[in-house]
Image 1 (cartoon, one colour):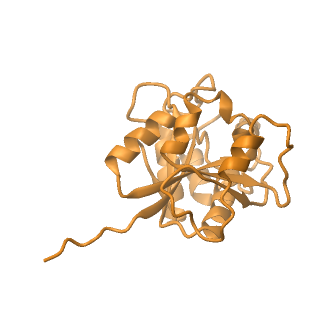
Image 2: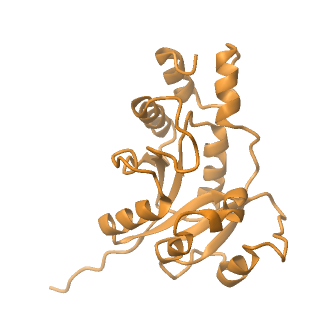
Image 3: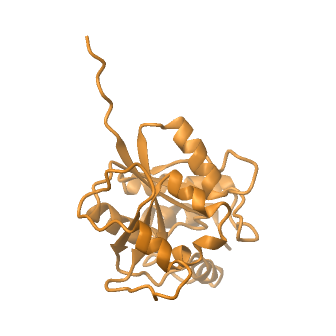
Length: 216
């Protein structure tokens, strides 16, 4: 009997502190999933964010919020691989570990245009293209200035096809999204002032925040 071929699974990844998770995370991801035929979308909460001083909610509380979010939005799944590592959550190290654990998956790391513009400041950033594709969320019609440091990277690697790339890594997929002017900082400030946040976070996340008394 011939060995059956296992097809590649296309998996979107979004990393962050999710402190708390909010619609500024979720709605762009839903736009990405509507545009590209991914099989999975994993949320990767940081343990020790390399570019931030730390988190406000505990790892356990952030896990509970994301777990509740994933139950409300079944398209998303929690991946706690970074929380189980007691070291800074460098994306390149996470992707190396994920590729070892899931060799039959093609990973698409989702980021905003602001993150892409500063990608050359990331730890071992050029190695990312050996491990995944990048999905860069931008407002419709956005054009990167030709003299920007990342312009050549985009010109060399931009995927222009309507379908997913045939390559397993190395492409940049610019994806139109409706920008969400929401930040975790603003949500924490609203909670500290006892203002309503239900237009900013999903009902499931609001419930966890309320029942645990987070960010008070």
